[in-house]
Image 1 (tube, rainbow, N blue to C red):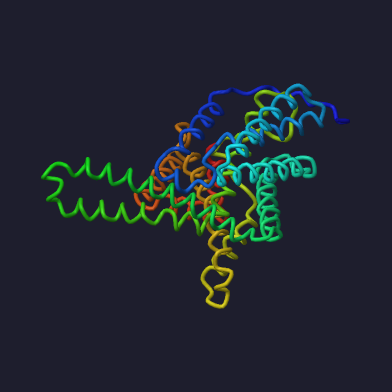
Image 2 (cartoon, one colour; image 1 turned 90 degrees about the horizontal axis):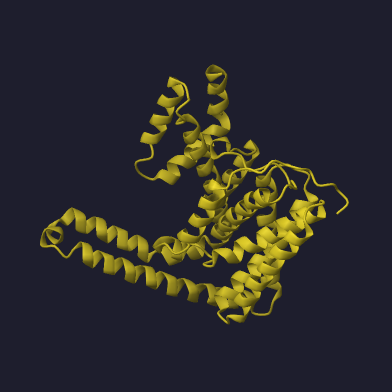
Length: 340
């Protein structure tokens, strides 16, 4: 609270509002219903926003704003704990741990950019949560039971919804006779059936990604409602990039996941690949968005269209490879001088 507030121009509300609406809607979509660990999106978002407001107050910002957001977050967490559902209480505990780590990261880190602060906070929260679970009597077994029960309920609901939708689609005799359509529907049903197992194996990375998104939205919303800067505002998606040294996390994940001698650490390797692979897929999407801007040069547009054609199947994997390639090729900087 000794630092003076740094006035910053307020930016538009259009994209943050759309992001929050999407955040609330996606949590109830069929596949996300099983894959997303925290099914109460506000339970993640409000504590992160409260921590940003408290950090802003410490830097000379508004105290009433900090008190208001903190009270709202505390009320939501208290209601979740009082709910009595184990999975909801577990989500509330995680939101407290992650928000605390974000607050420490905001105050301790000298970086101006959100991504570094957010990733450090998420990884620290995962480590702290793992220590707390391991130190609690019967903690790992209780966590496994709670997660397993929640995934069984969510996966069963998604499977029932899929089967109901399939019966609607195959009600016509022409559709029933189409063997190609039947094979495609069978494959889709197998995918839906395997979602709980996938969510269980990648739980830490999925939780980290969902929490990182909540932190990013809280960061963006805070910089709309306050003139106190915690760092630089989030850049447009087409400018998304991060340190090239993060490629070693992907390499480490591959080595751990594929080497038979490290089979005991295979879950760690899988989660490293999911978490950092998602970040590289987002970087690939940023490259694509940069090339597809209407003001881009003809060469840039042609490259963008070529990248778009690669995304017909396995889009996330293709975008991940584009993001990985950007580590060495750095296409946006190569094209930028020619454009300018």
